[in-house]
Length: 151
Image (tube, rainbow, N blue to C red):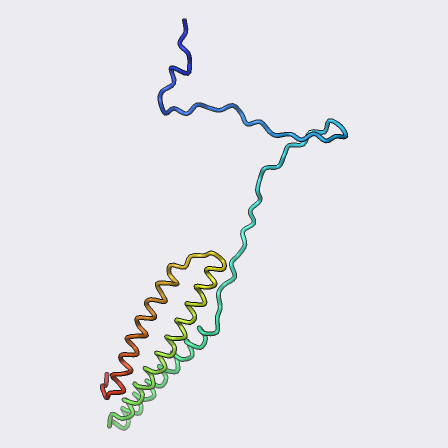
């Protein structure tokens, strides 16, 4: 008496299934047999790159803020009474804060874009939080500058 091969199989061992059977479709006109196509063709679509005018505005404002600061520093070196530099710091801080607000707008629009195309939005949220924190620190600096402090 031979033991059943099912009983000799170890627990957890995968039993091999029989070869897959192709589904066939017969036409009514004759004996033409065609296999059914079960493959799915996936065509990757490129997500359009996100562009928004708020990034251009923030870049322009940052560059203008730097230019104002360096021009004020140059005139401060020439004149030396401190009023020009204080005004330059105030204007630079104002331009930087405005640029950071435009950056927040940029990242909010990017978040909408990422929701639309179902791409990752973790870094967009992180950027919104970081830029928002820096903007709040900049507003605090602006208040200090308006009260007469100098950096």
